[in-house]
Image (cartoon, rainbow, N blue to C red; front, side, top):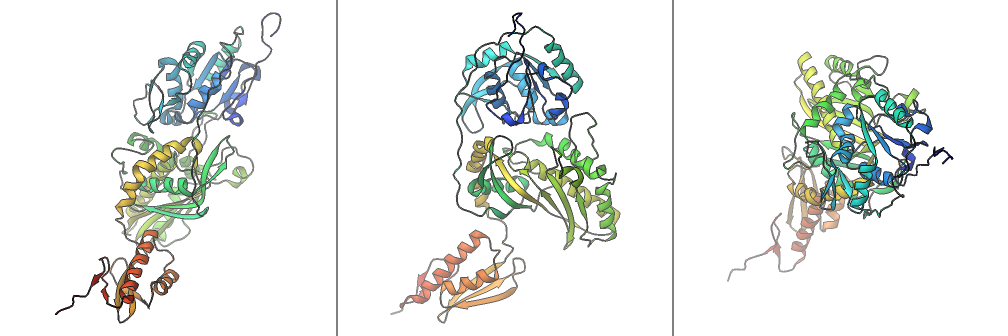
Length: 517
């Protein structure tokens, strides 16, 4: 402080996500939501702000933001840029504003943990913001009373508000820096392959639960570039076979969004929605429709399929090697889309270089399914081809769950995975096996999953001889099916090995021969 009471500078210290912030010397914190923070920083001098940072999620971001503000009581002003469609969908900025306007109350998180719940004006039940109960209520109330919070609807509005605050006399910090204990959730990781996983489900919701279970069970925990950790599998292929046109939402809904989110999100993929406002990133639809040489890739793939339905060249690209490989701070996560028609089914395969499987994958999948349906509709209208909607396939090269979602991911697995696993109502593509035991031999017929046509036969005197042959020919057997076969083959071997004789019938307990007197 100078002799006149003017501060020459303040130092903002971030305990959480420190590498994701732009630091200044003033008393105003700027929250930019989904707008890139550099878009505001370039219009300001460091002495005019304390810190600039983005806020994507009300559940993953506000708790850490509040903790950082409590650690920096010299921050007396807060400007929240709540300007984009993404901000409206996510609800993070609105929940932060509601914390200062409406306050909070004690309640329980989705996982049953005691917490503070922000009294939000957002009606959607899927957008709820929590603050750790470890933070003292008096500290939170003191923060609300001590920081002047303003909402901005544009970059210009935000910049002007920050400059207006900077012109005011310096205010003393509202208290001393406060730091509160923060509990962490640790994952127990079982042994498993890091690379190459295949997961299949009928709907996006069902497949999502299986994905989260696989990552949380065997994924590798490693640091991210964003001040945290994630649990990751590499090259995870998810196949959705039967998603309905109007999308399946489970009841009760366990997806991370509700039906009202779908239309605005899918529009960003289907249409050339270009955000001309400074600081707002591309949309996938803009990249697909006009992002490369002004070529509408969606329209071109439809034309190509109409002309040659068997083409294997129906490819759409969202990766611009000139920019994305050489320094773009926000390269697209979705890189490649391939359309293929096989057996009169139109499938879509999408490749993601990086995929947040807990918070983003379900929305990604629904957007891609909408694109697949659009292409199917247009090809059907513009040609004489009779096509069915085939599967949606996503290949996530880095399939990960962020550490601040571990608790919710564990809850999802606990409540939903056992029910989904028990369904077991889809056919193993590798086929079926009919087992008999006679004349001292185990005999197995391998049949197709549909018509039941016999395609191969196996025989041996022991279970290991037979399952060794099956394993060599059928490496794609589903795990539970393979374990079932092992158990049945062992029963057949036991039946043959008992001197008194036992009757083996597949899927039934072993029985002894009835001896007549």
